[in-house]
Image (tube, rainbow, N blue to C red; front, side, top):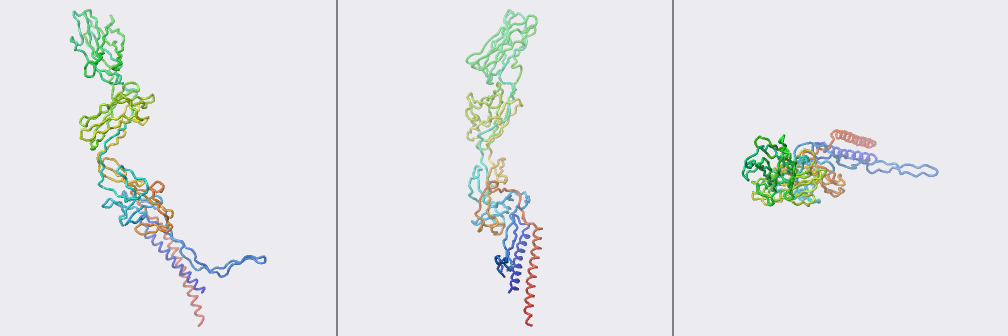
Length: 558
């Protein structure tokens, strides 16, 4: 019977080394299978037969060991190697590779499967599927606002290739940049009278620029708020040769003010040089916020003809700071919204918003002022004479499009701190940072990020989340059973799948445009093949040797 034991041990070795070769052959055959995980075989011995049992030591003798003869070997385990495979770049958006221990979740005929192979395509219905068997990739579908719902409820990933974004009207425009603190102010600080008043003794009253009371020279001045007025000037010479300056301030259309602002000043000149000797005077009116200095030092009284001009702020012309942005109405039509800033006073700028008349109209309150603190940051914002009390202060203007679209309220956000409009010594430059409207657009392209988000790129340049691919992880990956087509199914001891979003609790991320290759190492497999072959040969020799011994025993009767 002892020889039969060796025969059976050899047979078990043959059988199990053949299984080892089967595993090696399967690994090698799948060396180019995407997402394939190679397997390995480990062996263990089987039952052992006692020849002699051991004894314990006594006071007079030592102990003895047990004698056992093994009865062969068996397969201990067939395990998968779940180590990461290398990535091959393909450039195809729907080719996906997993970095980490997660698996794609697929659904076919109502049953859920799992896979590492990410060679997917979109079918005719827009479903993201395994092209071999049509299993649909599972995840979550975004709502109409591009928001991925919370939770782990799975849905088929379906993307409508004819998806269109409706037009979104602009409701907010954010501005940023700088207003140079040393800019020329738009308010009139100095009015300088420049030129000559003819020195003579007329026989009748003389006037410059003309004899009629309505024949005055007119210049434009600005009050503290940057509001435009007209300054009317006239000079009168009596028969004694004395000149008198007359002025009147009117509104920007040339109409007299409700409370007239008028005045006059007798002029005196140096007898030798002809230079005007009048002191500078201040013209003020609290109601109209007019405050400027009237300077006579550039007037002369010489024999030459009269020729006087009015120089405002020594000929300095304030330069407005302009910015523009394209906004959209509810029909998706584009319109150019412009903003203009003008320096009114120290730490104080006026602002106004405009739109072309062909585009529509803005509410009358589309203007105001910005006050800056000593650090150059916005302190307060005013609109149409009233302080904006919201936090942060954001003026609102109403835009009524001429295209038939609905009227819309647009927030004019100048920002806060250093993130919005500031006032420093840097050059003035204003730009629109963002606006939240858009024209209607069609889906033109798709991207998939590392978190599994399928992002639609639309023809207007906007993007929106359309869906998110989910992944599953298991406590025991080795317990999963392969069902073919690069797919696995849950089985005993695998544990329930844990559904997660890529990049979060799963610690698994997705690489778009790449495929994970097989992790089979050919050099290792060929080495194992040699080991398996030698093991098979050695066990075959055990059988033939045992057979020869049995043959000798049977020959004893001859």
